[in-house]
Structures are given as C-alpha cells and as structure tokens.
Image 1 (tube, rainbow over the protein chains, first blue to last red):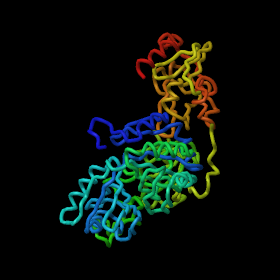
Image 2: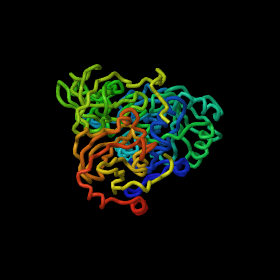
Image 3: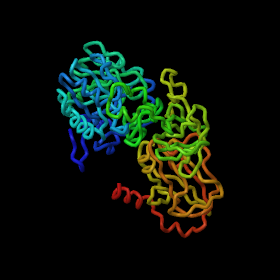
Image 4: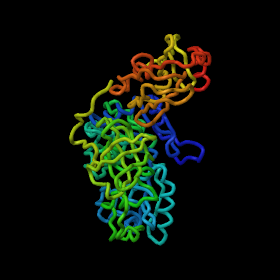
Length: 367
Length: 131
C-alpha cells in the first residue's frame, strides 16, 4: 500500500467511499474522505450514535523477538514493560534532543510481539528510525502496513453495533482481542480518537469492504477526516504536525505523563529537568469567529500561536489548542486571537473542552 | 438546496458570486457551486454598513468547519445592508443561496460594470470547463 511520491495511495475501502458520496482529498500521500454528508452531521452522529472512519492510511510496525520489549523501551517514551499482554499504550517517539518524531499507539500482541500504529505522514520515517535503532537488539522490525486495513468505530452506540456482528466479547478500553466481525477475523482494540466509547478494527485488507458493509447495515454512519479532526479537538487530543512536531517537546505539549524518564528512552536525557517557557493549552472563543492554525495569540505575558483551530459543533463556538507563555496558561485567563487582522476574545479553558460524558445538550440538529 | 441551479434573473461573477440588480442597488450572494464547494457554512463575517466594496476584490469571508473563503464583489459600491439572519443562521447560505442566504445589499457606484458580468448560461459554461 506504499505510494510513490507523485501518486496518491488508495485504501482498500476507496470504492466504499465513492459509493457513500465522499468528498475525497489528498492527505499525507493518500486519497482520503474528508466528509460524506457534512462534517457537522458526521460529528453529531459520533457524539450521539455511531460513526466509522477509514484510517487505513495509518501505518503499522511489528516488532518481534526476545529483545522486542527492550528495543521498544529504548524507542518509546512510555514504560513498555507495563503493557500487559493484549494491552495498549500511548507514547512519544523522540529524538535525542527531545523533539517529537511521532505519537504512537503500541499493542502487545504476545510476550515478545508488538504492533505500533504510526501516523501516515510519519510512517516511513518511523520505520527507518525503528530499524536503525534495532541494530544490536535480538528483535525484528517489520513494516506491517500492507497487512491491515483499519477502521475506527466510535460513538455511544458503536460497541452495540459491533457486538451484533461479533463472534465473541469485544475488548475493554485500552485492551485488544481477536474477534471475528461479520465472519472476518479482526484484531480489535478498545481505543479511539474521538473521546467516545468504541473500538478500532485492524482488518485483512481484502475483507475490509465486507466489514464496512456489515457496519453500514447496522446503522453506523460513515464519517470523514473532517469530523475526526473536530471530534479530537473538542476532547483535546493532540494531532501530530499541528500540536506536536520535531520543534516541540512532550513536556510543553502537556504529554509529560507518558514520558517515563527512568526508562532511559531516546530523548529522556534532554527532557530531564526541562522547564519550558510555553505550554499547550485549550481555549474557546467568548465571541464570534473561528481560530485557525497559525493565528497569533495575544496574552498579557507575550505572544503565542494557535496550532489547531476549528468551530466546535457541540459547543457552537470557536475552539483550539495554542502554545502560550506558561504564565498565561491557567484556565480562565483571558486571551485574544488575531484571526486575519481581527482580535477575537477568547479564554484559556481546562481540558477537555467538551466532555462526552456530559451528553451533548448543546448539540442541536441544524437540518 | 440539493440540486444545482443558476437563476436567469441574476448576473454572475467568475469567482462564484451573483448580483441581483434592482435600480441603483444590487444584492450580492454566492452561487450554488460556491456553497457546495465550501460545505456547510458555519460563520459569515460581514462588512460594515457604509463600507466601500470594489469589483473583483474580497469584501467578506465565509467559513466552513474546515476552511475560510473570500467573497468577491461582483460590482463596486457602498454597503447599505447586510443580511442579519446569517449571524444566527449562516447555513441559510447553503439552504437558499439566492434567497434567504443573500449576503449584502450595495448602492452601485458604476453601473457600467454590469456589462462585464456573465449571464446564467455563460456562468454554467464556465463551470463545465473549469470544474
């Protein structure tokens, strides 16, 4: 499924997207659905019912062998020894200087076998980094992207829809299980990127269409990358390339919790004792307007920058994530965002900006 | 509005804006094609009443969840009214782009500019070639 530089990759579900009326756009080298019926409708469907996202553009790296755990402990920022068998864990992939190369989910499939999910844009670089550092370890690093299609099924009714198609119990949150969905053997993970309950399915590529069709028949609505972005932003999940980059370290990004310095991972030395000048904070507009990536933030303590911005379909106001001076980072601090020359009033908020457990009283069907 | 339509009584600008001329004034809006390309409009930032708009130049912005688009003036003049409904219901631009989704009303400063605008047939031909 790797793509040449000048041609866009297509996932095994490409024909399903066309059939569902998707608007397809280039994304990280792939031709991906940004929306079907509309970002707001798809967003609301995931908050109130169930939606599914084709995330087959994301890559997988399999690490196996007697020293697979030791290799990953060196590469990944979190404590890999604490992933139970069939468990899942979030971590950073850092350079020596602490700059973030990618953010990753790793599943332990067996005592000596792990599957790490990469961002599409970073997959080739991550794979090369894994292989380069595998020298000297008794472990094999293998590109597993072609082995899997990946479908995220998310929303309060997502598990119920999956259960009607499953031949066994679905895994709880942050665990994995091998379950047949509509007769197709899948690796199912209790993870997601929306703040809602649900699962992510790793599916043999040639049978992904059958799983899609079965979920569609159960009433699960196709949702595109547009809604995926607004959903994750409402719950303040980081997006690599926006909120995380090689120029930012995990501490200022608020991800110190998944950096276990005592494990001695690559970058741990640089992060030890680090006291950043800036921090990533969620904010919401208190008046009109929509913040966008790159907008300058004005605070009493100096300027900051918006790294993600959108309209929140659930809160019906402009929301975003921004790096601001630490002194301006407390929830409730008034700030202003310069949106193409207009100063828009805003306020630093606590995360999440929208809590799915509150149930979306603010969600109003507009059409 | 699910089906594309380009009413015959309007004049069109190639940046996908329309003008309905009534005497010395004209109402402006965006075409069906523009609202469809943008997706659901969630914010309209209007110009001030009294502002001068210049043909072929941006005078306002419409935003969807994902993107910001400039709105271009099909003709020059002074803004005499803005569609207040859009502050609460910007989706009217999608639902009724030639009716309730109008953007501004302008007192024209150079009616001869009308000659450079397209009629519905010419605009639809432009879409067939360009889109």
